Image 1 (cartoon, rainbow, N blue to C red):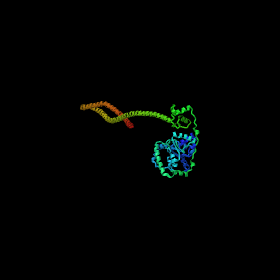
Image 2 (image 1 turned 135 degrees about the vertical axis):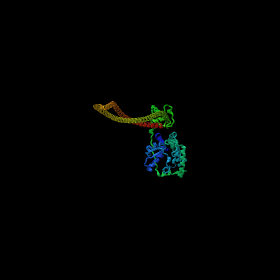
Image 3 (image 1 turned 60 degrees about the vertical axis):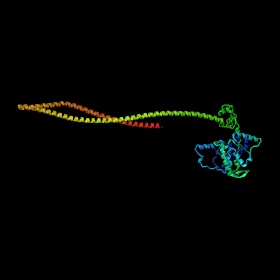
Image 4 (image 1 turned 90 degrees about the horizontal axis):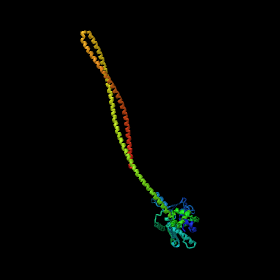
Length: 508
């Protein structure tokens, strides 16, 4: 039996150890290539296998493959990596493989019956009996029948080309499965015909013989590629779960009733739900291999997604409501800002007008101060002239006194003269009267002069007080005017800033 399929090898080692002797003693093409690279090409690097099969992981990590390969990298993972990192293979130059020798018809090995094609091409279809079996439902059932025939010494095929996957490795568990099997076969047929036309050297058994066959015979030692197998049937000896344990397992598989526990769809490979539950209990399988479990998990995820969608929708609605509320708040804020801006502008205009009014008042006060100063100077001049007038009055009084004295002397002299001095006495008497009258007039104006002096002094004091207070008022008005200018400037700044904020909200 061909053994490139690790699922088949695992099944034989665990559940049908009597068939181990019928497994091909040579490694799979993957491991043969690794052995060739390590032993013949002296490759010391870790080897990665670009793989169509997740099951190759088991083969790579089997103790009988001796760690020849380090990594099983599936095509599905490679494609996902290329997509994630935006890498397009079309950007790179296409190169050929470094096969020495060329693989020949080995390129068809990965499709259903690929091994059969190679063998029949070498030895002829009529000279060999090959059984081709693919798919879970056929392969493992066939193995049981095969060993029954061996046991009963009935005829069996020379070679069994058996695979776990129905469509071969080209649509294996590690592929994207996004290509039609017919498209794949068509491309392989094209490459096959090219290989036949390029590499035919001679004929034997009425069929072409290829370079790889002769080259391997000449350069390789077959024993280097032998492999061993282990009887792992002890791993298949499973404990029987109790009724409670079965119930727990079925519940974990979302199989709540008897109908669900007896679907027996065979998708898990057991054909019986109870056997699958038993395998789970013994750690020999995984719930993901149950279709019903996957369906229920999808339903749970779908319901969870619906719930999440409802939550998201609610959040979106709340966000929209908050957005509308925010818009209303922004509108209110814009209105407030517009009102504040308008008020600030009005205050600024009013402050400017007040400043202008105060400036005019200041000018009037300065004018009044100037007039008061001029009045004080005029009063001082009048007082000076009044002093001259007082001085003149004093002189008039003195002259009057002297005249009066002279008149008195003249009267005395006239009396001495007798009749001859009578006329002179009359003159002296008139002079005396005039002097007395001048004296009386001067004395009568003296009181008025004193009153005028008192009034002038009072006006001088009032003028001085007025000037002082006007100067004080002028200083206060200057301070108020400076404050109003500062307030006006600040109002203009605030109005400008609020206008910028208003524009920012409007633009957002």
